[in-house]
Image 1 (cartoon, rainbow, N blue to C red):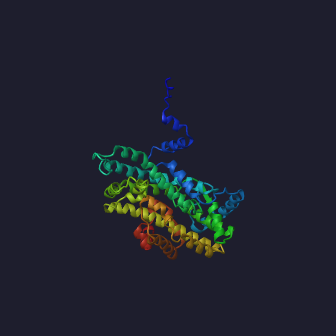
Image 2 (cartoon, helix red, strand yellow; image 1 turned 135 degrees about the vertical axis):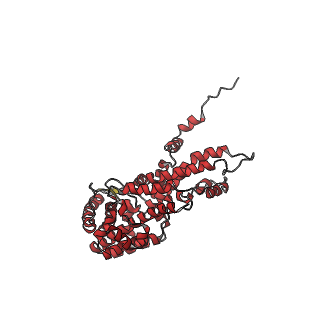
Image 3 (cartoon, rainbow, N blue to C red; image 1 turned 120 degrees about the horizontal axis):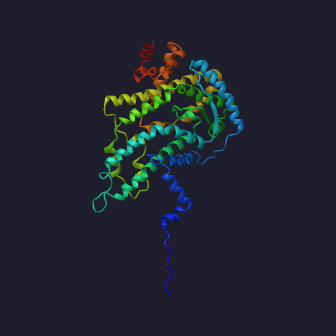
Length: 393
């Protein structure tokens, strides 16, 4: 008696019907770009909620913060003389997962050009940097694997950076990227945890967070700010050089028996960029640094002035925040991803520039830096505020 004929069942079709493999296929095929943003989203959400609850905010959380934001808007407008945003702030009280998703939207226009640059450089090294097989020819299977894996690895790293931040950020502008639209996000699980751990009253601490968010919204609400910031980063990336020698060294040193080898080789998008090759590129980098330092300096100056005036517990909150931020290198995740090194000295220059300008003139004069892209201070002007005042006279 002959054995029954085995049905010809394609393994790929079988695996496609398995829920786990269907989800893996969906994630892998979800992006044709240099970064798998769907994977970044899933990794970021998972990490942001890892080891702790991520409960949904209540309606009362939103109502109370809406009233607080309205008061903060009046205070910021009165102190800074900046024009109020044309659209009404949309207060959203969110979970950590929602903050991650919103941050991906803000980061994507900046990081996609960088990732394109990296993958193009990787294509140039193909056939020369990959480990050789026993026949002494490039391992074609590994090349094919890398074509599929690099977007996944970059997505994983972006998601990991955002997930780490998502565990402790308080609002939308803890990641100080200019955004379009009226949304203000408040990460209630992290806010409530901070209040509990540092024994702070909810009303005053949430007012402190609201003033921080509204100050940044006023800065970035000027119509030219978002496209200008994106252009600064794009211009820097377009003229950047990839550290091909460093990339080759990483690739040649890979231990293929180590499952983390590829991930380690691509640790940090920004780390793959080499030193500025000429004075023009150094100037492009300095423009990005000056923008970040000036924006943070202005925001800190206005925020500190308002909280000291409006909140009786402002000193306690500032002390708690200072101690909370100590020893947290992931707070500079954006700089690591963009490949722009920002030193504490540069941020100090931004704060001292604002304080000096206000001391010599007033805050309305300082606010003129947001009048146009040409009004922003350069790095030399941050170091010597009278240069900026002379130019603005």
